[in-house]
Length: 275
Image 1 (cartoon, rainbow, N blue to C red):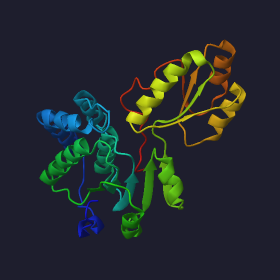
Image 2: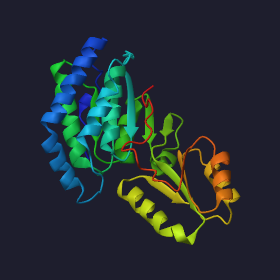
Image 3: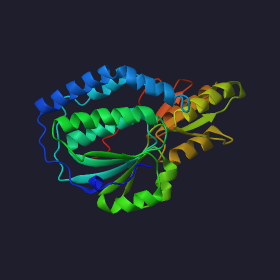
Image 4: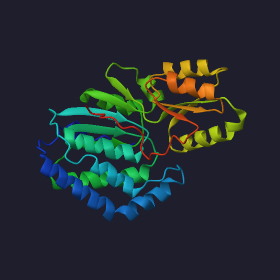
């Protein structure tokens, strides 16, 4: 666990961020990511000894580019704790949102992809120091209720991304949950069980929450998936056209995949977590 230091309680540097300066920061960030790409990929090689997620430099650069010309909101010293499993793509998104919204963030994540995350945070904080922006982004490596209780009273809100277990464990008024590749999967054919197993393994290797729904009918499965507001992806594996039509028409407010790869995109749906 990262040792708590007094800096995580200090206010953020006061700074304005016009589009010209934001774009300059983003350009330098992209340059630094490219310059350190071999270091990032070497760290990824170490991480995959424990986790299977492969990081692509191209995807990191595209994430940075997504924030170009963003309107910068200068919040009045807002502070938020963000708890997630440690997907490096999410790390980059959260940090860029912190920069553009001047929101102090304390990142709490597990050992998943720890090496890549360490490098990304070192690069980002090093760049921020060049622009005299201090005390914006800090992190703990692992979730601990004891450590969280020491710091949470100094922060305005706790945000949990993707981890329903921790969200339910906290059970506090100022905790907000965002799904991130939280999946409900229903398979109605034994012939497709190998595909179901492959999807399950991939989700497990990438620290995505996947629940296999074992109901007797498509109607019951749809009811179970719709009733879980913490899931944002619904998968059906079927050879039955009637079941397919029911699934497509009756699943509400979730991304739907029928007999197709739900992991075509490197990054899941991303929200404005600090708004």
